[in-house]
Length: 141
Image (cartoon, rainbow, N blue to C red; front, side, top):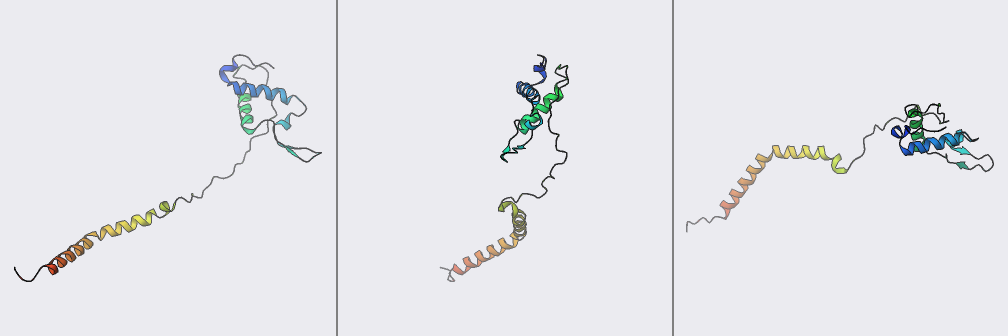
């Protein structure tokens, strides 16, 4: 199968290269095994897929865009199906720093102290006046 020059405007060079490679590789005897993890029956070793999930995604995109690119023949690459179920999103909030966790309590304490600030300042002023009067001599000279 040949990809027309019009495909260059629709597909990126990387996608074209991946699509061509996948089409040629899938025609061989190990077509579906190129896209999934396989286990060697003799040794028991696991083999990685020839195409990573990132490359599989670009191949999948290129096969969907192939008709738009002017490819007349149907493009078939034996890609595994997309997972239908996904893990639920994380609902637990991150722990955060200690300053973030205690911020509300600190702000509350500051607000309470600000509310009592007038009384505190008045007590301080009275104490300073009393100290000044005590230091003043009783004699007028």
